[in-house]
Length: 432
Image (cartoon, rainbow, N blue to C red):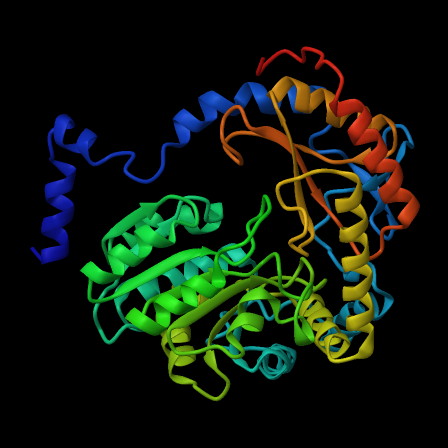
């Protein structure tokens, strides 16, 4: 019997008490479901969940059931590129040129030339070695075990330190990461705790978001200080800042760094600000192919027959071209103007940070659902956010600002939020 077989045998025949002691170290889905099911049920009953719609362009939709039209205040397309005519046309042209939506084979065996072209365009645009995957979550699944294994830290598995508010796609990988390295979770943006760990361990890797999905950002300058002083390795999720800020839309992390270094891996989405499809991993400086080879030969998600499809790759190429043009600067400026306008009208904890995500805290889940329902009736869709996305008793509205929102839309929305939020909440069946 092999060592692996022995391990499986030992686990299989452990006593119930021993097995119970190893459970729920990183996830407890059953408990989470039991807590939040009522909240989801109320959201669905209020008509704020899973709404079938038709697209009207520029983040506007029509409900198929009753024809009600509304502005989407929760779109991740921060620059409005998801409906940009050049990207839509490029997606269609790529499919027609190849005559297929996919190769339906592992990229390790066969790949269309458009995949090579798209990765080369991203690598040149951001001055990195970029590998594409079909989502940012897949990027996390690809990158985290490689970092935890020690392959990027001189062969020594690092202490894997997760920020408490790191995105779910990162936290959900903890069981896999724990098979390679020790894991610690620290309080949100706790630089002091992170530095203490750097002093105590030979290799430390910090896992967090550059910009958090519910607002705010990581203390990038402090993280770079720890990197310089202790050799801290950084794995950062940049899904929410790529395209929105920086030269060529390189995001808050690369803008602060100047260029990527060998102690940093960045994962990102290409279907948010970038306006295309899928995700990407920035594995190091442009021209450094060693990590790319390791990833393509050792990271399971890159070896499966799942990738950005041909249409998405065409859109990636068109978006990369747009990111090198004056139009990107114009769109970034429009977005900043809309953020400034919103901040002048609604008080949030993120006011003044220049980023497109705003969290309007309400508190009670019931009051939040009622507020969102009233806004929907008035022509603005913004979903209620509650546990487990946000802490219990801290429910609110997550607003995503876009470059293609009009001044009138923002002003009307903010006036409604201020008026409706100040009233006494109406019970919605839960969360009071």
